[in-house]
Amino acid sequence: MNLETAFWIALFFSTLRQTTPLLFAALGGMFSERGGVVNIALEGIILFGALTAVVVVERFEAALGPGPHPWLPWLGVLSAMAVGGLVAAVHAVVSIKYRADQIISATAINLLALGAPSLVLTYFYGNATNSNEVANRLPLFLGLSPLVYLAFLLVPLTWWVLFKTPFGLRLRAVGEHPEAADTLGVKVYRLRYTGVILSGVLAGLAGAYLSIGFLNQFVRGMSAGLGFIALAAMIFGKWHPLGILFSTLLFGFANALAIQLQGTDILPAVLVQAFPYVVTVLVLAGFIGRSRPPAAVGKPYEK
Image 1 (cartoon, rainbow, N blue to C red):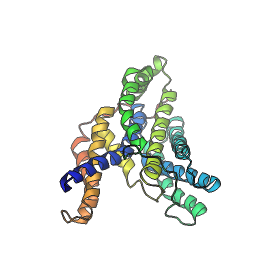
Image 2 (tube, one colour):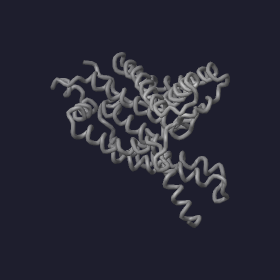
Image 3 (cartoon, helix red, strand yellow):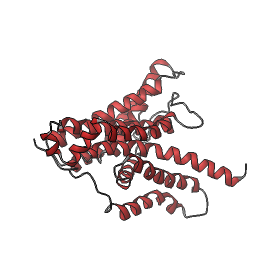
Image 4 (cartoon, one colour):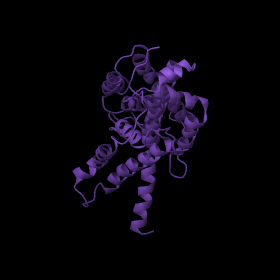
């Protein structure tokens, strides 16, 4: 195998790995905004999910021994999803029940996610920057974490749920015209809660992938803006699962290319590191005005 072929193979697998957390988070954001609630807290929820997955696995390892325990990383994944859903539920209550500003509520969660992990890390590991490494990370199949395959399988599944089921029809209705949906007997509040909590579950799954699927420990700030890039991908993908797939692949490719170019003299190091974020800004600048969000997104509903 020559160097060029090896480069493209490595770039392909790296693109899949980099796309996975973006795809989870963007699909989650789609459910929330299709129901009418803006959730920019995806960044913070990813961090909470990543921290939860590692702490659960590491604490069980400390109690049971390093293993192997094949079931343990899956317990970490489920715990991350549960915590992600719980954090999103807080945002849902504040935004839906109390009709607070959705941006402020989500920003508060993001700010909390910057500080709370340091307290947890200090308590368990004596430092504020990273956890211990875990021995029981998610296994690999054909060189990829099983969560990579799950992320791509979720695309047709979420499309079917959103466009071919009564739940999807009602969720889209409350995101477009909640008053009309309410007059037809649709439970607006219940569907909005469900959409926001689903977004948290999927963002928590993205966090678990980062900490025990991609790496084997939690590092403070390890999301590195992925939640915000996922929101950009959702907008670029026009709140549609297939559009989100292609947009997250674009951003995943940009991240993977930046990784592959590190250590080379093709481009300056600063430009290589900034490349994924430059792509994000250019995409938003070129397409955000052309994408039509759900009509009632961000607007509190009072029955």
